[in-house]
Length: 136
Image 1 (cartoon, helix red, strand yellow):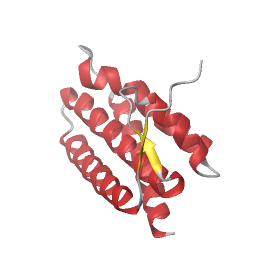
Image 2 (tube, rainbow, N blue to C red):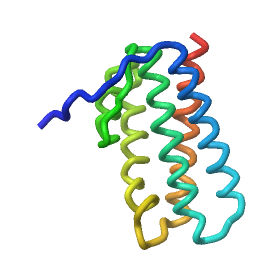
Image 3 (tube, helix red, strand yellow):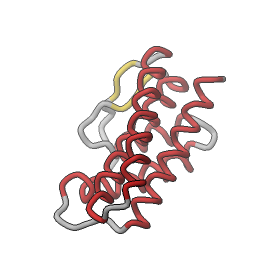
């Protein structure tokens, strides 16, 4: 069943704001990742998830003039997939990040270091694409 459209209007100002936030989350994720404490993997992944969501919002603002605003962030993947020619690939990256969201933010188990590292890499890719979109 398709997800309900829960979007808000967004233009260049919103795109720039969401990109700034994405970079901030990504910077924080990378700082925490460098601490190399086992218990920090969830924090690293959680921040990477937030970076990916914000980057997705920025891309959608630029390309579609709207971004996802629902509580279920997975609806953002549907919107992102339609936003750019490589939207399907970008949506897959965001979906992978969102797959870590529950454990990262609310789980009682630790995310493996390799998964946290992957999350940062996926977030970095999304933030990079958002930057490219704003520079177009």
